[in-house]
Length: 73
Image (tube, helix red, strand yellow):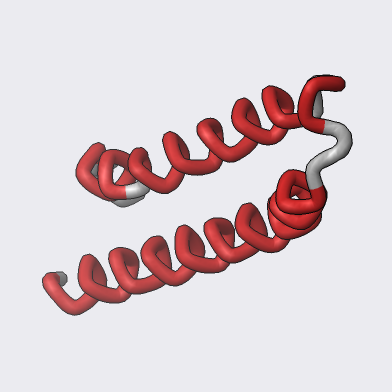
């Protein structure tokens, strides 16, 4: 069994914080005060795509870190 390395998880924390900020911001923008704005509507429509892009970036980072770790051994 491989030893656990916290460095890999710490590298993904900024992506986690961005995803959390996008979710909280999306819920904030869903307030009735902003319902008439077309810009808000477009921003909310792109929110799932932005989150999906963050997932792809996180997966690529994890794969790269795993390969780097295997190259060290």
